[in-house]
Length: 404
Image 1 (cartoon, rainbow, N blue to C red):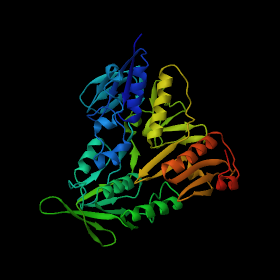
Image 2: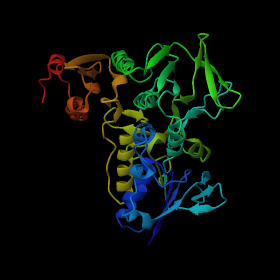
Image 3: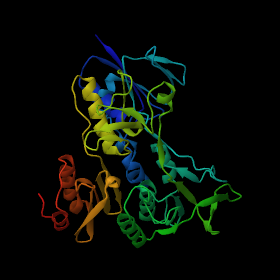
Image 4: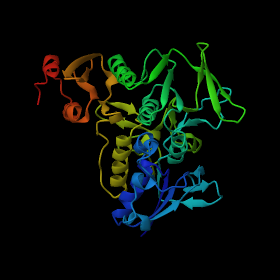
């Protein structure tokens, strides 16, 4: 008997669930509801290859033309899910269509936090979340143009790196006293800032954009900072973070606390509904708590877990969280949950370094690395294994790199 699977969200997590389940050839009639006009695509290239002009949509697509998943999925594109009727097991869409389901996957991702100051709606002020956003921003990227980046997080820094590689003048405005303040240790913040400065990026820490000013022609002219400075600019990109997109789930009565609450198999408080990707706050058996992770690898892992469950398999969510950010020819790689650490040990490998984060019991809980991929990649993979095995390595052994 054919069952109806509805997936809300056409990003990495939702797109991969549709692809895996469809390719398995099981008895599912699949509908994928996506607010975007494009088929599912990978987002990491948006702040890199797309802005640099070296990648197009075809290079980012999750589903390729030869993939038979195309034939097994009803892609309901450029449409939003507006109401989730759990009692009748149906999803209402913005076009008025009602789509019934037997199993439902919520993969609604996250949305860009609103940045509202005078002039923020000027057509030269952008945020980066979608492929269309990246293409619009990329049209402004050319040699000698002046860019202001609002926010010193990962997206803002990747945009800054791409702009410098295109020959632009770049200023990053950050309200905190350092980069990556909410998510990275100070040691990493300082190293990343030094690397960007060497590439020609300027910074204003402890400062905020209070107003954008347009020229008579309507193009962006300048930004006024809280320090009193007026900075000339041709384009601005706001990267002040994202929030979990949980409103649909919450209004339907599912348990939401920062994200949609799930168990380690990504099942929500309703037995026929799963949540995965950025929007899910899932129970992690390694860390014995609910966590929410905004990362490509997390979306990929979640898609595999949900797909396995739908196909009658059981794969628990014990994968160690992993995140990376490539900037210029160096990479930031983070594994585990470094913010849970109470102490850190540093290992230097030439110009690169890795911070091992230990909890109060001496257990390795996370690792943060900065350097060339070929140098730090192996160390992060080893740290991933040690974290997954709940090891308590000797700090001196970590520092000297003598563990296997």
